[in-house]
Length: 396
View 1 (spheres, rainbow, N blue to C red):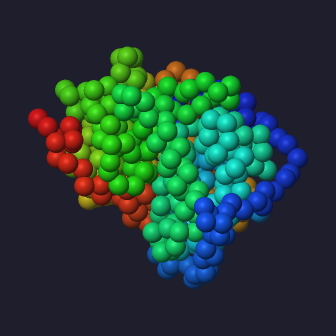
View 2 (cartoon, rainbow, N blue to C red; view 1 turned 135 degrees about the vertical axis):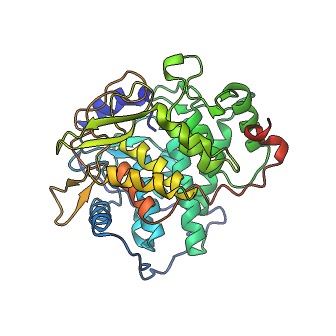
């Protein structure tokens, strides 16, 4: 979830623009060799419903010539997180060339962004790939997750240098208490620790070593509610102590995490009138103020239910999500899912941007497609052979 602290940055960046400049620089591997060239493979045969096919078409058609996808139609707004999700959609369907176009863009920014100043790739930029702003740790972790899937799917290490440098940057954010700072603002100041991003980085960085065990120590000591048996987002604020995304991410990332965490999402459940068609939709809000249905987060819970073989709950969510489709204004026979059903607040009290409920969003559409592909992007990084003594969520 893009936390409330991002939204004011998001509002202003949505209207920014700049002249087009396509980046084509290539990064060399440490031994001086260019990355391995991956043969273009035939797409994997995937059976999607008619509705999901139209959503798939929309996501595919959102890719620009520079490889990037705008977060919604005609927004001039590009999110690192959204592009990582799109790459995962492409990889799962064997469309490796489309994923490579995304990776090639960021590979061309390794020296100027990832290895420059405070490090990391920019969280936001315009459609031309310019005017980048701040580095958000969780979004960089999602890019690493997508690279891990690419290398697993292709059997190559084409982007090994970029993946390794991303891993090292994530490791560098760890503090003495085991937590990771959330990245860096444009003025170089540190972003506070965000639970969502921390557990995403836990998943993204391969293996299990001191980095991972120290994260678990931080979570146990600072972000664990032993009564509710849930991770907390903002433990100092009773109104926003818990957040929807942590339920699905916890179950998806932490082995043997109590599946009951998914049933505890009723604290966010709400019914709202969908802005674009007047349909009553039941789903989940970002937090317990229940003033909006967050469709990306609702789809995350859907994927978690599917992975837990909770088909009744999953099918109920699918039926509600599929009432929210918005037809594309730029592609025929294409549709997507908006970020929210209606206008309201994000996590916390900050307002969403004006068109969050009016245009299809890559993030919501991608998570819906994960459900239709029976795929969780978190499964690859879940097998870490964590010692039982470190699984604080199971120590009762």
